[in-house]
Image 1: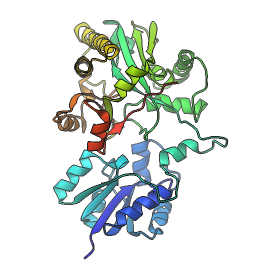
Image 2 (image 1 turned 90 degrees about the vertical axis):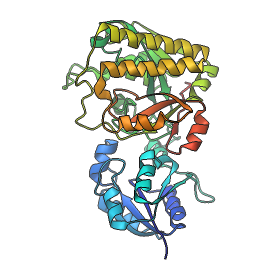
Image 3 (image 1 turned 30 degrees about the vertical axis):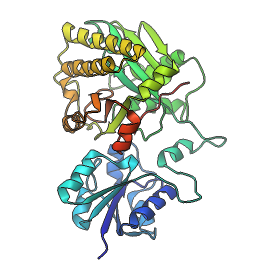
Image 4 (image 1 turned 45 degrees about the vertical axis):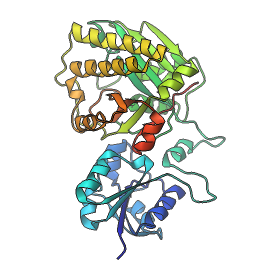
Length: 396
C-alpha cells in the first residue's frame, strides 16, 4: 500500500518551483496538499491573496502529481493540522524554507515521517520562488533588488523618548538584503517597510542614506497619523542605512548622532555568527507594552549592553558579543516583559539547549516573529537546522 504524503503552503503565485516540489514529494507516495485559506494568509502575511482560495484549490488539484487537495481550516504556521485529521498521512514533506521545529515536533507527536527537501529547480529550468517573482513583478527593464529590512542587535526601545528620558544610549542595527520571505508582524520593521513601498515599491532611491532615513521617518509619522503612535527611528535608519549602524538617543525621537561601519571583515564576521528561526507572527491583539516597567537602572542596563555589544563587534570578540547580545535582550524584556508570550518561551527553551547557540533575542518589539541567534558557525547551523535562515547584510 502506498504511503500518504502531505505538503502544505499558500500557492498564491503558483510557479514551476511549486510543481517540481510536488513532483519530488509525490515520489514518496500519494500526494495530498493543504492550501492556506484567504483569511489565514491575510492574518499571517498581512496581505490579500492574488488568487482566492477556490481558484488556488482548482489550480493545485489540476497538477497531475496531486492526488487530492484541501483548504486548510486552521490558522498560523500550523494551519494544516485540521487537514491532517482528514488525510491521516504517513509523512509530512517540506522544503528548507518551510521547515521548522514546530513541524518536526508535530510529526514526532503523530508518529509521522518528516522529510525536508532542498529547493531545486526542475532540470533545465530556472530556479523560482514566490518572493523573487513578487519582487520583480511590474519592473519591466531589470529584476528588482527588493526593499531591504533591518535586524536590531542591541539597545532596542532606546529610540523611544519615554525610554531614553531615563538614560541616553545607542541602538545598533544592520540592514538586511531580502533573501528570504519577510513576513508581517514578525519584528523586522514591516510596518516601516510597507510605508516605503507606498513611495518606492521596488527599491530604495540612490541618495544620501541618512537623509533618506529622515524622509521615511517623517513620512511614516505624519501629523495625520490616526493611532497617535510614533514609530521608533531605528526602523527607518536600520532599513535605509547600509551595513552596521548605531544611533544615539537622548529623550528625542531622532538620534543625536549616527555612526556606521562598513568594514568587510566585520560584516562578514557578523554574518558568520547570526541566523534567525521563524516563529508564529505577533498576534493582532498583542500589546507588548502591557506591564512595562521602566526605570533608570533598567534603561542604564540596556544602554550599557549596547555599548558592550558595539565594542565586542568592533573587536570581533565572539564571547563578548554573545554576552552583550544576551544582556541587551534581558534588559529589553525586563523593561517590557510582555515581549515574551505565546510561542516565544518554548522556542527559546528549545534552541538554547544546543551547545553551538550562545545568545538569542527577538527582533523588534517581540511577541513572536523570529528568534535571532548568535551561533558558532551560521552556515553549519543552517545546514543542521533547515528551518534556520542565514542573513546577508546589505553593503550599499
